[in-house]
Length: 379
Image (cartoon, one colour):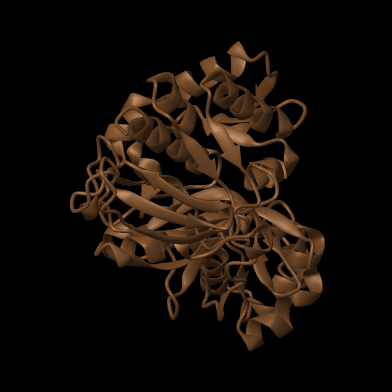
């Protein structure tokens, strides 16, 4: 995106990619259909040490702009829940679209090309010397669009952070984001055999200003918790903290037990709880949290526990399973209008390598496109 934006302005652009093909992360996204944007994108859908940083880029290239580009290329798409837009057929169509735009803008793309070093240059008319496995490149500008540490099997590296540090830019410490959480041993013993069960919940995590809640699906795995609600809250979670899960949002599951002459026993409680949870999960919950004496007070406590299941994860599944990397190049180091370094003229950082991390649901792609367009218009 950045390359063809700059190419359209008559800039000579070379894209260097160490992968053997372009767009590998795009191709696996959205189950192979690429959740390429979210109609509801705003700066509030992103985590960053500077919550205002993303506003400028997001206003320059909006979801409507991305939709217009997709439609111009005749790519059919559809909207899923919560404003998420997916290709009808394949993520390959997005990669083909980007490649076609680059070709029309006379952008050259070298794949299978490793970056060996990036350094300031004393060559007349050039600010940077880039050593690659295909030779030396002298250039006025360098745009770092290396992504984060997530999904190393696709070739993720720390190169972007290393380049930033080399030129004196601060990096916000990185951590896996949008990632499954791992049970502590006690919870693993209680729940792991229910792997595959899911329920709609409200997951809450984080502290103070960073506290957030998401109402989406939870999935029990053989190692812990996943599903959209957990992936969302994982970006706000820090080691040692608890997350709170409402297993029956908007429901009073014990209401049937308060009716006149109602049975009050485990079977009746399981039946009531099945309005919110799969049968096996309801049975397990009752087995672990039986109301003591089945009194009104005990049932009220039981109801409260259902809406406030506190889980203290042992950790995450790490970068191998993380959809994004939280943290990255400190936004205070960059001009929000252009993504250019405030310290080093001609050095730009865009996309995931920057300390701007979106929610699940197309937000991270929209940030990638928007930050790319800002840099491409300025480089």
